[in-house]
Image (cartoon, rainbow, N blue to C red; front, top):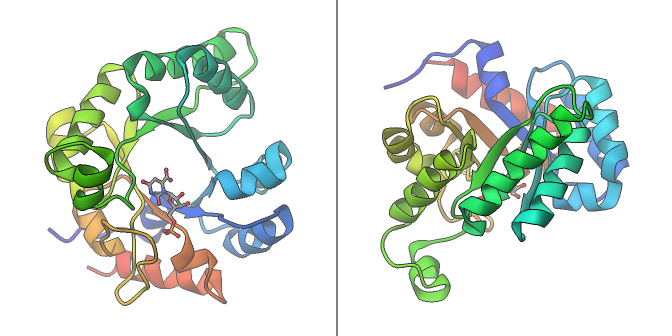
Length: 247
Ligand SMILES: O=C(O)c1cc(=O)[nH]c(=O)n1[C@@H]1O[C@H](COP(=O)(O)O)[C@@H](O)[C@H]1O
């Protein structure tokens, strides 16, 4: 089914991955995206270089922020990490489902700790990375040692994340239907592995176009290089929005 979205609806689904080496480069792109209504994602490259300050700057501009640090550690460490993240006032962050349910529950506890102590005004959404979108079935079976299809592995992690109390998962758009069938429509799917027709795949293994991802029922599309590595990021975002608003 082809879903017809307004421009506002389409923009609110897009999370632009600000994968840039420093604050200056990130803010240069962000300034071009200001006012569009899209989210921004701050990942390891930018956060390890520019830390809390870049999060503050992006919030000041008015962006909703997905802090993508993919925590994966013992429960006590993740609980403390989640509390620190919640204090920063981001809207969403992620942990690895492979850390198991005690670790994921600890992330939720860390968020509650911050809210109850009055350190965070509201609780960020917490989502779990299932299988990285760069992972193919060959890698899953042959290197990581998990048998079966990628979809089976993703759904198993999604169910675990749901039972641990998380609000959603990161997966490829190819697995959204199966995740929603197993975890319910309200369980969020955040999907990288988005490539406009003809764009280079790079290291991504499980991909769809923006239109296919939306038609497949995803909640959020994470898009990095097809926007931020283009000479004109605003124009690149516009052409993706155009694709999503045409029925
Ligand atoms: O958690 C993520 O955001 C993530 C999970 C995943 O499985 N695959 C994945 O690509 N990502 C992130 O999504 C972004 C995708 O970027 P592009 O491949 O450049 O569009 C990167 O910032 C990745 O770190």
